Amino acid sequence: MPGLKGDDDQRITYDTIVAANGRFAYDTPVERPTQFIIIPMQLMEFDQGRRHSTSTSDMKLFLDKGEHAVLRGRIDSTVFNCTLSGTRLNEDHSRHYQELRSFWIEGQRLQDAMAGKSRAEQEALYERFRQVMARRRACEMDYIDANPDNPLAGYCLTKIPIDSVLTYHERLADAARNSIFRPLLEPLLAKAGKYRLIRLAEAKIVAGSPAPDFTLKTADDKNFTLSSLRGKYVVLDFWGSWCGWCIKGISKMKRYYDRYKSKLEIVGIDCNDTPERWLAAVEEHRLPWINVYNPKDVPAAEDISVEYAVSGYPTKVIIGPDGLIIGKYAGEGPDFYEALHKTIK
Image (cartoon, rainbow, N blue to C red; front, side, top):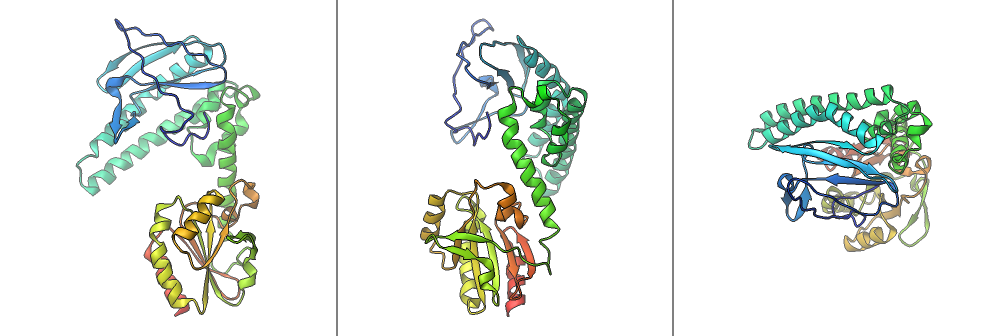
C-alpha cells in the first residue's frame, strides 16, 4: 500500500495465525491489490510495544482480487527461508528474493555487529553495510533491465535510489507500469520528480544569485511577498511543526532575532504540514517573526521549498538587502549563526 506512515498506520491490519503440525491457512477476502507480510513470531522483535521485523525475518507476497498464494518455508536461526507459489507474480518474486537473500543476510549481520562497538568500528561496519546494500540495489536495477515487461519490475523500482527512479521507469513496459504495483509507483514518481527539480534548483540557490521571489499566506490569511522586505537582511527558515530539530532551534533563533531585528527579518516557511498544525505551532512557540504557510498539495514546480532546493529540515537561507543570496545552511548547526553574526555585526 502507498504512503504508509509506520506500523501504527490505521490502514494496516494485524492478525496472528497459529500453525498446527507445521501448517497454517489464512483465508481473508482480497478486494483490491494487497501486500501481505508474513513474520514468524519467534523472529519478531518488539521495542516499546511496537512490532519490528528484520530484513531476514519476513516474507512479502502480493494478491489481487480472487487470488491465493502458497508459502513453504522454515526458520534457520534468524532467517526465514521460504518460497511462494500460486500466482506468476509471487513465483517471480520468490525467485528474485532468493537472488537477494545473501545481501539481506550479510547486511543484517553487519548491523547486528555494530552493537557495543566503538564509533570508529561502527563507521567501518556501516561502510561495509552500505557497499552490500549498493550491490543489492544494483541487482534490483539489473532485474528491471532484464525484465521490463514483468510486473515485478515495477516493485523493484520502489527499491532503487530515488535519483534513478525516473530513468528506470522509462524502461518499463506498460505491463509493469500499470500492474498491481501502480498505487506504489504513482507517489514514488511524484517524489522522484520533486527530487529531480530540487537537484536542478541547487545550481541557482548559491551565494550571489537572486533569491527567487514568492507570495504565500501569513497566519492571519494575508499575502506576504518576499520582495517587500528589500532593503533589510532576511532569513528564510524552512521548518515544520513535525521537525524535532526545527523546534529545538527556536529558542536560539529568538535570541538572534532579538539581537538583530533592527536590520533583520525572519520569514518562517512552514512545509509538509497541515494549516491547523502550523497555526497551533506558531501560537504554542510564540514565533515573533513573519510566518507563512507553504501548501503541501501544490505541484512540485510551484513548491517554494523545491525552488529553494530544500532537501532537509530545517534549512535556512540568508538574503542580503539587495535581494541576493548570501548563504544556505542545512540542519541546526553553528555555521548558520556564525554566518549571520559575521554578516550583520
